[in-house]
Amino acid sequence: MAETWHSKNGPPPVGIGIAGWVRVVLRAIPLIVLVFGGLLILILVRLLERPMCGLRRPVTPYITQFVCRTSFMLLGIKYSSDGAPMTGAGAVVANHASWLDIFALNARKRIYFVSKSEVARWPGIGWLARATGTVFIQRDRSEVRGQITVFRDRLAAGHKLLFFPEGTSTDGLQVLPFKPALFAAFFDPTLRDTLQMQAVSVNYQAPDGADPRFYGWWGDMAFGPHLLATLAAARQGGVHVIYHPPVRVADFADRKALAKAMEDQVRAGLAQHRAA
Image (cartoon, rainbow, N blue to C red; front, side, top):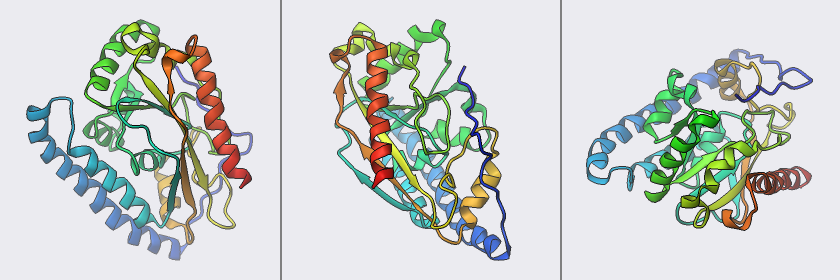
């Protein structure tokens, strides 16, 4: 199981005044309409899409992408990106800093998250995850064979599967070592020779004058207060996503070498953006 990451310094304090609560209401109402309205449309479309297309989803990912991109506009968070998302099926790995990662990584490219099975049971987030095609896995070596079958089927359907190899979220200012075990399935003979993998760096810029960790969500931080603090912000910051050149799994000797290469790319992207 992944260990929860804790900062040496506690999370930024949350204080919301009267003006902040007004902003919460003004942002929350259209955001709720967008997210749950989009979810309803997605479910209705999927009722037709699933029997006709099976695992393939030619329409519903565009709905998810629209909702995620528009959410940043409603929140007032600036969104930008560099690099080219890879074409075709494959695996994507990224650093994990916040629940906002879901929106940031879906905003430009249609992807499917790979998540621990517990998330499926979370109220709200679990429903959204299931509806948008998230792959739920047990992080147990005994489950690797079953995971390979699931990954192979989803990749064959043209899906891009996204992983957070750190295994937990941080404050957004650093990258934890990538766990090689998460890469083992991709060295199966049925996947290794054809599979591509792309590293992505997700960089958050806090609002002017705010704690640099403002958008980070980690440790024992509750979702509700963090969401409210984001909605209440008088000024918002931004998120910048960097797509690194994809690599072929077959070019690496083993899962440890691949995990290290992906970690180095993600870490370099984070350092480069912070230096700039």
